[in-house]
Length: 400
Image 1 (tube, rainbow, N blue to C red):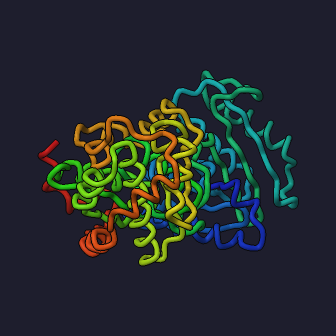
Image 2: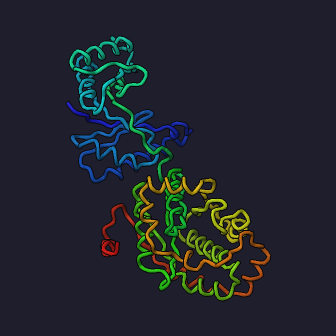
Image 3: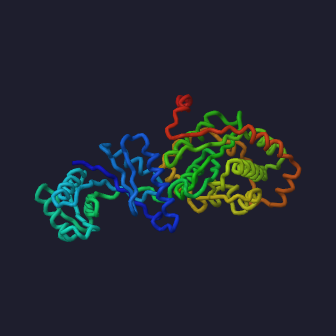
């Protein structure tokens, strides 16, 4: 006997209305995509849950993959047996002996099939007694067991499941439209992309680079961050915008305190143009309120005025320590701190305005013609499709 199924449960999706089926189908598609490298697996939908038929595959690496799929609330190892008491007892015994570091257990039976002759409480006692009789050293603990074995007797079969393994929760990626992530290469923006994806958003990324002031290593850092984000969804397209000419123009012709504000406004204008061209519905940034000069309420108000697109700011109320902790959890932190600067850090003015005046900004911009520079930058933008564990970038690996 062995575990032959994984039980996948979801919580927020269950609260949806008439469009619930769309969310469930998308979750099924995302699970199938994530597990595409495993042979013989099948993902089946039933009312209120999903089952993955393992077909002889080791469950552990499959569980690890599923823990990167948004929309999954929990995962349980499961054995499917016939609605027969001896088979149920044998499966429960296997579940107990399979578990590691367990001294206490609990049995819970749910009898969906009311024609099954043994009531739930009686079944708990029968199975518990069977486990104690056929093992040594275990005890029953109904309040805080090391292992909780659940028996669900349905019309088609009985499923025996063990402890609950938490999933990421959220909504399936691809159910909430598409957003363009402004990916700088720092700590914050990849975390913002991750949190947007958790709400079902598909993302593309945009990065502004300024060669020769920024290096190929800085560009590769952003590509590697994008690849990390693909672990939580599908392939991601990244738009690499050459920004050197525009930045030089800004810092030559715009007074220093306002240069950062104007630069951000130009970035949003280019990003909106990319969105329109690619049917993207919003922008996502890693801004956290008050963290730097361009992220004060006054700065965001002035910078926002160049676009009508909604801007998603998942980090807006988060502390830096919380952002760093999450970046470590999603494995982007060590990439983000590589010492290769992006265009935003290289051209930082000494005293940027924290409360820029809108009329002053408009007056300064009116003296500079950015139109041709913006058009050239968009035309020269390089688009790359990054996939999970993409080996096409292996030529850069020796740089690190």
